[in-house]
Length: 532
Image 1: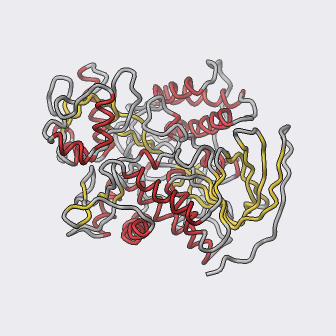
Image 2: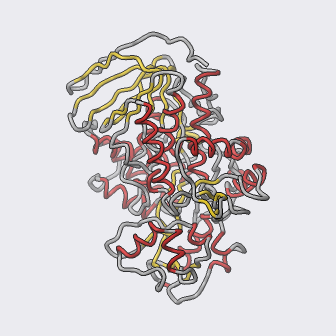
């Protein structure tokens, strides 16, 4: 199918006190982000028009590369899209969109086949694809590549395919503003980070695939590039943002003095590893009948509870029931990480604790990746499709990227020019009085979010955090380089997250309020923000 007729080339000159470069070429598609969502969308779009991929770092810097667990798909014996959908909706704690979950499960097998055609080699066992089981899944349905190096294998295969296709890639190029006129996106302003030059370019379809905002928090499993850029860009341009209060904390990140909180995939627990408190007691069966295979929010909350009861900064992940050979073959990254920090997981338990992991909320889209701005699409972690609800089912994230990236490109061919319907009950950020605040820095923001908007929350500390963040925003200077743009984006995402968490007076999924410890029927709805 051909791309619909162009609206004509437009050139933009933005005067901002910096040297400006005008890019005269017209692209059919500009894709922002070089993780699996962006690369897969670019490869599909290149079959139908001209494509440019822009990424603020290098093609290797993204959260995809860090993904260990794998990609979920109902392709095993006895499994079905219906079962996968059911597990997804159950994990979502009443807020998953059943239609979106059905799309995810029904289109999974085709997208896995696409990845294989693009060169991804999933692990096999005796000639059949090897399937693992993770928390919340009723059956083994997690495909993996290179053991626990799935993300790196996916990223490498797609990056190689991008190079073979000759799709242009601008590295060290940060998107700084979406250019919108009468509700239609016309192009994008970018900053070339190493040269300090700005440029503007026009496109027919803008695809945001920039990842999440995990760097809001002091302890996170995310790559340093996860600074909420796409969410902030879209919100400032007038798009709706939804479910920002739902931040998933991974239960098991390495907790060793001096070590970053490196992810230890829950597939380890799927293989039989157990959790112990510092007294050596297994505790998960007390919290959930599935024990270590309970949904992530349950496991993370149980770990926090055990840490509080024992006064310890961690619990232990015990892999000693697995052989050294099994650990090294199935989890080479986990094994290497532990050994690097002086731990032999085959002989001693590994200290772990929760860390911020996945931004469930983001740019609100419909089932075709359309945002509320015509011409702007979103997929991957920066998007909020409604699949995950209040708590993401393990390994659904990589699947969501390819399913909805495909639907984005399909939509540009079959029904371009549309947008998601505006939400009647969208709210604006409340006005807040300026208060005395500490100096703003990335570290002070991350510390504030970890201490007051972390895994367990309560009203007074959320209100205090909201006032501080709002005051920081009031005093923020216009950003002029990559670090200052990233800080401004994180600050906006932190504000959206904190205000939504303060508004939602209940505990649901991965949003946990000490002062409202139970779900409330009146809160079985979404919080949607739109700039006033």
